[in-house]
Image 1 (cartoon, rainbow, N blue to C red):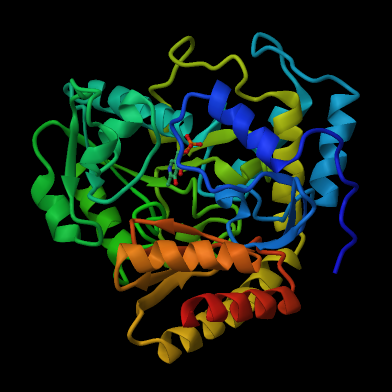
Image 2 (spheres, rainbow, N blue to C red; image 1 turned 90 degrees about the vertical axis):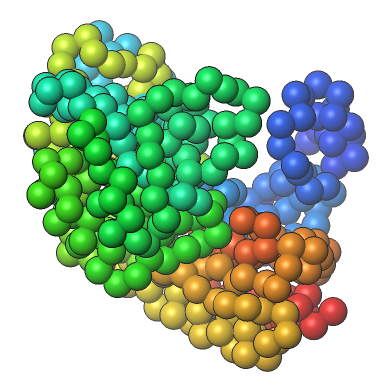
Length: 406
Ligand SMILES: Cc1ncc(COP(=O)(O)O)c(C=O)c1O
């Protein structure tokens, strides 16, 4: 077990929580934990208590907290130049773009700061693609999906609740049940220009589509001259055992969006596109002041280079198999409580019989020393850093087992 990083000075948990309650607009439901330090798959709260992290800061630290290569890259870049405008060139973004293109289906990249922005870029690229083909603009997305909180992203998201109170919604989206390619084809109309889905739905409850789903969508998109756009914000960057989740299907999309773990904890996003999809985003058509920022892009370069080192991904797959076997065993031991265990790689979901139980198990696990979260009301989302060690997997399984048993 690694030595904990030094305790930071400053107020303890209760004081920090009180200050947040006083000064922040309360848009998030938070647990009463202040995370003050992290190393790998371990976190320490502001009162010094250690816990295991099976949440990876909402899947943003796939390589674990303070990964040495990423931390060194951030430090180096912060001492060199922090930000360069997009009116000039800078090295970190050129290297990041090269890495993303040379290790994907893509021909070119637009760099931004978050998942919602990456999806905005994808939707704008799709509209340009459609405008050049008779004025098509509509995007078919999946029910239960999540694509972010900007206006285009909430319109794309197949969950009514994210749009409530923000109407009128951006027009141009249709929804089909996730995993149902026939329903996608039925939703295609004369104005349709693209299909946007997650390879595995994350916020929607860790839902894995049936075998062959993406291949069928690819075939449908080709037949109707549509762009196939994959939101890999949550599934990308090694989370599912390969660099991108769609690699496991053999399907090449036209567009892929990335964020979350791309910088292993710093805000960076990207839209990767093939030539056909990128063509519409011409000079002056899109931009972002901080897109391609030197420090965040240096972190992303270090993250991707680590994922490509030939050791990290094979180890992630090995760790994921151990984790999954343990979760399956817990599911078998608690058939009255666990409806299903599912997932891909290190993105796992344990669906419980009801929302109250899921909340209670997550709260008890937190008390016992294991951080995980509940998504889609009754699904425990289990997403440790992919660098988690075997003893840490076993420790977490033991704690989760105790929380389920109580
Ligand atoms: C699949 C997916 N797309 C997009 C987003 C939005 O990302 P961000 O919060 O960085 O805008 C998320 C966030 O959870 C996500 O899971």
